[in-house]
Length: 139
Image (cartoon, rainbow, N blue to C red; front, side):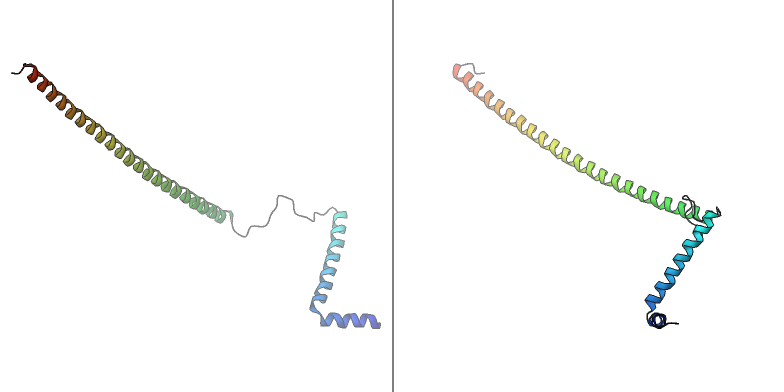
């Protein structure tokens, strides 16, 4: 070996990162050569685009997982619907109370107006009786 190669070998022995980089580059170069040779022989090298991975779990197990996730989602939707209905009911009760208070205010206002009108009529009746007494139409 020459002096340059010995220095490079000694340098690689001392530096783990550089040594791993050399291994990596050798592996990449070997893989590229192998891919080219396999493609010349019409051997499929890459996975089809619709193939994602081998499943570690059975279809039955994955169906159970999917069912569980679906039931959790349905539960969330059901709870959300119940919560929304509860809030709508509270809002409706609040509006009913507000309308009832408004109706009571209107009724009270109307009753006060009736009382005032009755008092006014009584006053007018007394005035008419007084006028009748003055004119001599008394009983």
